[in-house]
Image (cartoon, rainbow, N blue to C red; front, side, top):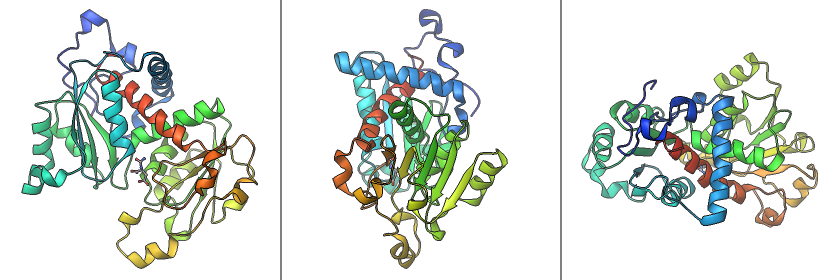
Length: 332
Ligand code: NCD
């Protein structure tokens, strides 16, 4: 979607002097893919994210989005993504229509189409956050909607806001992105967070390592894109081969819900586990990340290891989404 959508009614360009240059072109735009974010836009969002974090630490919240309403429409389970969007909106003084826990109780169960549900929700709201099991669903919703649509995960496709918070966490934990060695472990085939984070990291001077069983390798098209862009990249089945040199270990859950054959899931579900023994091989400043939920890939004993960043990552999600909502709604 390359045009600016209807701005929220409280937005007044002349009044606030908020122009495209002020917010790096996010106002009134859909957020469907990480490909929309170049390094300048990322720097802009991360700067705003630090300001949001500071503001929450000082006063807990503000009225920046007062009078604005977010519709949160989730056709797949979620804890963090939905809760952090809701918290982000509320900390900025806005309101939320949460359809996150029972789309089956909405008119979707009566057979309403996605475009019709979207066209209805936008009558009440200024921005819509959508999670849906099908690739391309957020694009379809964005085409139907007059207000901006933010993709909160479309099947095995993308999860752009998770990748933004992942990248912010790397920056926050390690102070830089260029020059890092990032290893991603687990379900690289179905894991949409891996796909989106990989696409963001392509813009930086990083080297990438992918660790998975054969069945769950990174999609060929994405791997070819990395190679074409000259990014140093290597695949392996063994975490031990990458752990010593990694600056970031990004661990993911095997995506049980994406397997059509349950025996295949059983074959790979216990492929690896990050334990204190594994972490003993890692750098003292390595960052251990996970988009969560975890189901056994990381031993909870490691939660007290200072390198375990996954709960800080969760909190960063709220700050990043505050920055993004403010930008999209033109109140940056
Ligand atoms: C991820 C997702 O939904 O893709 N979770 C999240 O949004 N934090 C990862 C997962 O479900 O494994």
